[in-house]
Amino acid sequence: MAPSEDILVRAERGIQAALAHLPTWMSRFLGYRGKPAAPSPNLIVCIWGFIGAFGGLGIILATFTESQYFTSRHVPAIVASYGASAILCYGAIDVPLAQPRALIFGHFFSGLVGVIIKVIFNYSFPEDGEGFPRLMWLAACLATSIALVVMHLTKTTHPPAGATALLPCVDRNIHALGWYFLPVLLLSSALLLVSALLVNNIQRQYPKFWIAPIPPSPPVQPKDQQSSPPDPEKADSSETPRSPRLLPTEPHNFKNTQ
Image (cartoon, rainbow, N blue to C red; front, top):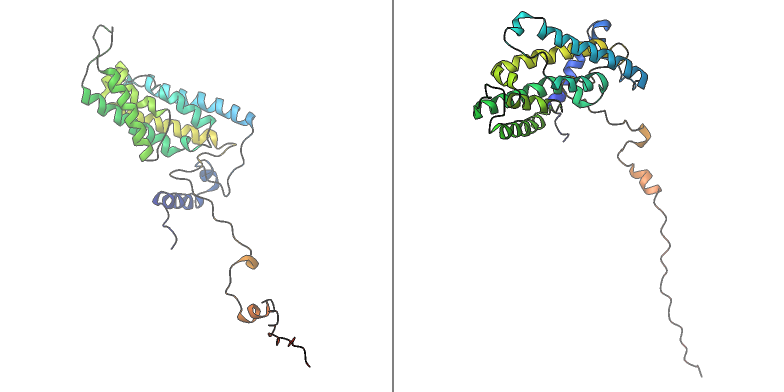
């Protein structure tokens, strides 16, 4: 009995089938190709990686620094861990760690862990700006360690998100945001993802998958190598002939006859 397919792989097959019915210009910028794209030359990776990182981070910075809605709430110009995400999502776009599921949920789950740890420890930064809370080191270590486990169990490992879990515990401004840090993360991830879809699909392919990689199909054996029930007649004729059985000879009488 064949093992049942992973539910994430089934969902990915459904997404790819839906993308195949979209117009070509639309499905291309959502990462769909009829067949996997060949690896890009280093020059193409450097050119489009530079353009993507510059534009993607610029969009995030412009959103949070030029909007009165965010500046009035003292949202930081950018969550620093997205600088590391830009390296993955524009430069190393083929690796599983850079795919949309890891990008969005890795940051969100890690930020959630960081905020929960911050609420549990419930410490405050000194008002004069000097020194650090006594238990900050413990909260920070716990936040990143637990985020590692959560990302591994949910298959959303995204290395830059380790810093996302750390920030609510060690950064004064993000510590003050509290639960509002989570929608900031979701918006930042969405902006980075949209810009990556636009830039990376001009001469490359991104994402390689949305939810889970689809395993390759097993190779098809040629018909002459496929197993078939043996033919009794051929089996009999193919048997090696047995050597004839030698009958025992009668012993000679060596008595002298007189």
